[in-house]
Image (cartoon, rainbow, N blue to C red; front, side, top):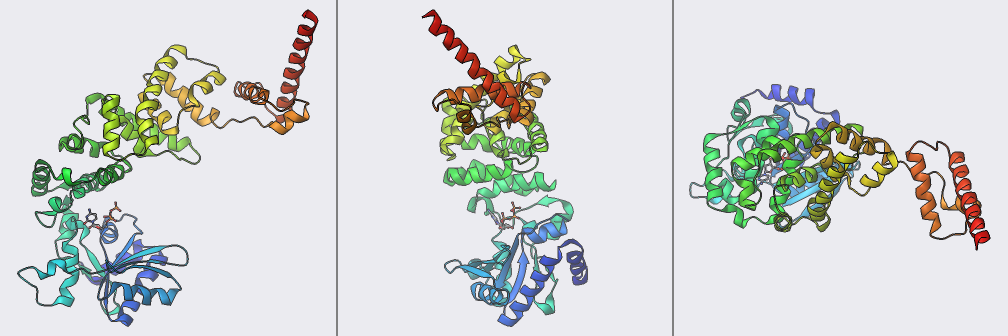
Length: 442
Ligand code: CTP
């Protein structure tokens, strides 16, 4: 058991001063409200793992909502209370949020009732959680500030790099924890303990996923796919036959695994070159996971998992178009920039990243990267207003001319707005002359 002094030192060393001050103030407020307050869960786990985490979850022994209101009053913060659950969210004046919960005691009424309600309610609350590593708490009251509370040997599991559930029904009660186990295993480089693995297998065999809504399952899948390297976790999901449990068509093949790894490279590459990345990483991976499915199966999976219609279309129709385009590019390259642009500008970022991953040559990959980094953002400087000033009456020709300007610009023929204006003037005088000729011929 580390000494309180060591924990306080660790907090001082690792936490930003703003958070340290906040935790100390929470402790003071708790004293004034006559309750016990603890920071719990992921925050404490990550403190011990030297990982950044600024999600503060407070558990209060006493009335969490009253405490939240009292604390907020000292800081001019806002409180949103959920009386049904005894929880509250405090929003500080800079927008920073703190979650507060009242220690719940449902389990406390169990047969072997514990003697002191006040003292054991934190333990009862922590008992309801998923893994031992998430059950650590640090007390914040001034006289006990920095006391580490470890009811379920969470520290030992952190040291042994093991994920263990607290009680055998954990996965049956909440099947999303299976996904969390897989996600944490890879995020922290931990392994799932032997008994815990068996319980996962049992739960899957029992069909716990039949009770899990598609939307919740997808929420967990997205969380996995948003981790920095989800590939090992996807393989693990496959190993547990979890993907197939959601839909039999979601079986991972050797080719898909390869493509997933290429996708990670492509995503990392894209994020390095993109100024502001608006690419949904999870969607690229998910699109790849669906590659072995037929269109019908892929759509079914998307519907079961409650993806939005545009996401479903992206995974099915746009992906097929992308595959078709890749085949065509492989034959056509090298291409003028304007043609490359015409081939690729119809695709969303996620699909273009997928294409980089799925391309069968470096030449194609480079062409797509060139489009993403250089061509995609090119726009003519000249606008409709300028065309009007050049004497062109408004009409459908505007669009055609602007496309001609864009093409010439993409191909490096135009640098400045003056170049563009001169270019348009030339088009107009050429067509003028042609029309004149036509008049003569007529
Ligand atoms: N928790 C749980 N069962 C779940 C989800 C969460 O018991 N299905 C508990 C965990 O013990 C966790 C706490 O609720 O510590 C908060 O969960 P979450 O907000 O997901 O935080 P983290 O564990 O830090 O996970 P992440 O890093 O993904 O946010």
